[in-house]
Length: 546
Image 1 (cartoon, rainbow, N blue to C red):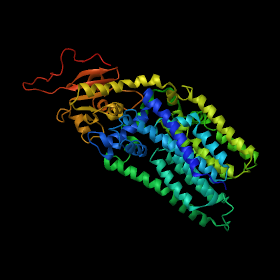
Image 2 (cartoon, rainbow, N blue to C red):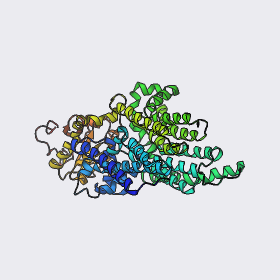
Image 3 (tube, helix red, strand yellow):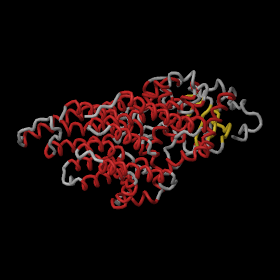
Image 4 (cartoon, rainbow, N blue to C red):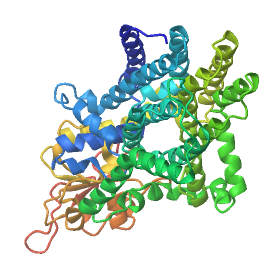
C-alpha cells in the first residue's frame, strides 16, 4: 500500500486554505459583499460575546449551532480586528479551514484504499478546485464543514464495508453527529446510512483479503449484527437530536422551536405562497421529481463515471452500488419532501451534496478494480467534466441565482452598503440611546457598529418585554426593516401590524434609510399630559435618508 508523507498533506491543506481565504477576503472585505447567511452565522456567535446580554443561548435555536460555535473562538480577537465581524471574516476563516481539511481527507482516503499518491493528489485538487465547490470554501457558509463531515462519514462507511473494522464505525458515528450539528440534511443521510447497514450485513461481504471469511450466519445473527451496528453509528446523532430538542424546550419553551418558530425555515419560506412554480409543485409529485432531477443532473457526472467504470470492469451486478444509491438519494428525498410541503426555495446549492457524497465514494470504487490508466481516466474525466458543467451553472443567474452573486460581488456590495451607513449613523448621532431592533434582520448593522452593546436585540432576555412595553423598559428608538415577502416578519412588524409603514400612537418617525429601514422614536408622556417631542426640530424625518 502506498504511503503519503505527512508534509504532502500539510502542503495540500495550506494551498487550499490560502487560496480559499484569499478569495473570501477579497470578496468579503475588499469588495464588501458578504452572503447574508454567512454574516448571520457570524452574528450568532458575536451575540454570545459582545451583545448587551452576552450568554451562550444567544447563539440561537433555529440554525444548527456548530459553525457559529467555531466562529465564536475566531471572534475572540474582535477588539483588535473588528473586520472578523464587520466583514464576516470569522466565517471565511472557518469555511477555508474546512475546505483545506476536505482536500486532505480525500487525498488520504485515496491513499488508504491503495491508489497511487499522484492520483490521490490529482483527485483531491480536481474536487477542491471545482469552481462551484471552491466557492463554498470562501464564502463562510455552513456548506464547507458539512461537506467535510458527510464525506468523512461516507469514507468511514466504505472502510467498514471493506474491512469490517469497528474503529471505522466509531469515526462514522461522530462525523454524522457533527454533520447534524452543522445542517439538518444530516438526518436523511443518517437514515440512508442505517439502510446501508442492512444491505451490507445481508449481501455485501468484506472485500479486504486480510479479513477472515465468516461462516454463513443465520437470520437471527444478522439482525443482531444490524441492531448493534445501528446502536453504534446512530447513538451520537440521535442523542444530538434529543439534546437539541431539549435545549429548544428548556430555553425557548418550545421543543420544536427550530422547526416551527417565527424564524424557522417554514416562516422564512412564506413568500413561496405567491410563486406559481412552487405552488404547482405542492401536491404534484411528478413536477417535484422533475424539478429535483433537473437540479441534480448538474452534480451527477461523477456518479455517471462510476456507472461507466462498473460497465467497463463488468461490476454492474455488485450490491454495493445500492449503498451508494441510498446515500445519493437521501438528501434529495428531503428536498423533495420540502418542495411538496412548500417550505423550500429549492436553491441550486441545496442539491449539491450528492457531489461530495459520490466523490467520497470514488476511492473505494477504484480500489475494487484494476489500477490502470483507463480506470483512472474514467474517474478524472468525470471530475473535469463536472467542473466544467458546474462552472457554466455558476455563471448563469437563471440556474444558480444565489451563487452567481459572487461573480457580481461589486454590484451586490453596493446594496449592502446601507446597513454599514446605518451602523455609522447610530454610532455617531445616537450614541448613548437605547435602540431596539430584531437581530434576525439587523445583524449586519450590529456587526458593523462600534458600540453593539447599546442595541437591545432579539437574544437579550428583556427583548420581548421591551418590545411590548418600550417606555417602561427605557427604549428610546425602534429600528424597523421593510417587510420582505420572501422572509419571515421581524418581531416589531409581527407584534405591531404595519409597524414599518405606520408606526404606533406612541412612536414617531425619526429617520428613513434608503427605503429599507425606518427609525422610530419612542414618545414619552410629560407632565401635563403632553408628549415629549424635544428630539424633533423642524423636519420630523430628520435627514432625507441615506
